[in-house]
Image 1 (cartoon, rainbow, N blue to C red):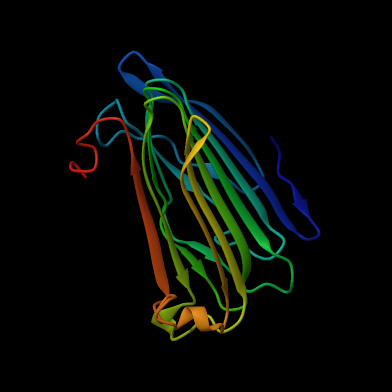
Image 2 (image 1 turned 90 degrees about the vertical axis):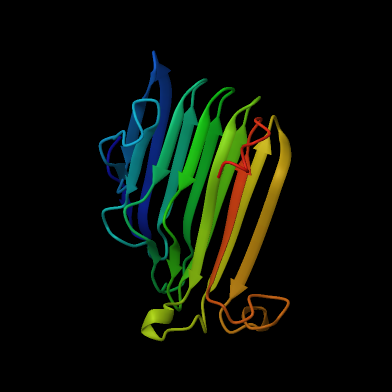
Length: 217
């Protein structure tokens, strides 16, 4: 695949495929277009679990950017996906920035989806979505971490918009569906029934067939 830049932002697509080879999980497919890449796979837990860090060389996402990540784990594969740094969504001049992930985990496979947090700068307009499709007894552990504004710099999320979808499915049936919409300065950011003034929020999901999966975390 080749790089693609348009007048309104980067159009990037990353496609990954993991497969079991003897007692080892390998990254058997890696294709990219635009500024989405991966570091060389590494194996800190041994050869059965393939670790891959997803890179976005520009260092941040701006209005008009569209990033798409499609990942498939074949039967028996085990992979951990992460990022080397927080995702940064910068102030937009108008257009939305969009980042979508679709993760497919086949029977007997396991995926750990552990990216660092997404930081939404004041004035950003973003729409992120992550859909995980599990097949059969596939296992999944993953999180989504969101920070509105930059509290360490004294910046609050007073204007801008963030839309977030996080979905987990098994064999075509929904297990978990989350949808959030946050507009800068709205009451939901401070209300007790909302974020209670906290800039950061997170969701952790664990799904699998072994009864002791959650207990072992």
